[in-house]
Amino acid sequence: MALKSDMKILVIDDMATMRKIIKNMLQQIGFKNITEADDGATAWPMIQEALDSPEPYEFIVSDWNMPQMSGLDLLKKVRETEALKKLPFLMITAEAEQGNVVIAVKAGVSNFIVKPFSAAVLKEKIEKIF
Amino acid sequence: MSNQSNFLTFSKPFIDAAKNVFETMVFTKLDPQKPEIKKDSISKGDISAVLGLNGEIEVDGVAKPYKAMLVISWPYDTYFKVASAMLMDTFTEYNDEIADVGGEICNMIMGNAKRDLATQGYTSNMAIPSMIEGAKHKISYPAGTTVILIPIKSAHGEMYIELCYSQAD
Image 1: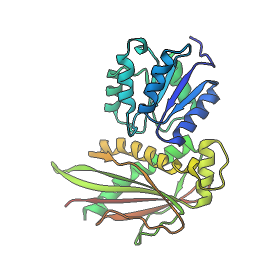
Image 2: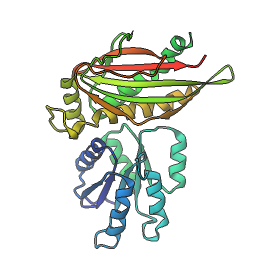
Image 3: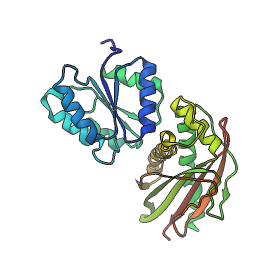
């Protein structure tokens, strides 16, 4: 499937720096429709509200470690929702341990990326999802 | 003393991780200089990111607790250049927009180093990074730890990595 440049993407990270980096990289790859959230807890109502709108989110890029709701807990909520079972979900983490990958895969993550990463690596991961 | 003997194996993953993080996200190569033992608690740079780590290391079948801390300290000019490169923007003063750049760098370095430390038998729990700003600020190292200072040269200017480590006897 060819990537749509107007695909509606939600970038979730508690660190403003990381949100800006991910947004810059997604723009470099060619995406234009990017929204941000600063925690899983802020993102979850946004995802639910968008689901009832004409423009639901089509791709979630989320950090793992966040203070209120982790990326893993958000992923579980997303996968428990019938309409979101197949929503592409890319998890980003600073902790490069193998155990994390297994946990995320079991929870239904679409792909997994370990910090630090380049725009080229992000593009490669996205292409594997779509 | 176990502190000194383990320092070399303990510090290498951090240096390797720092090189990787700066090459990938800041688009610059780091040139680490000769490490030295730091004797005071005054920062070398104007902005420091501080992140604690603790866990256990197995020595001769016995799990021994250790505590460690990673500090990265930047002179203002280096910090602004690093933040500008990382965020693809231009920053010439310290503000909210770049306040967590150092913490995020510290996080990524610690996260990567953790994986390598695990292969050496260290279990580890990461804390949340904190930032300190201001010329010659004081850094509170955990009591009883040895602090190693590694000056780093880069195209964005100099910076300092500090690692402290102590292991129960």
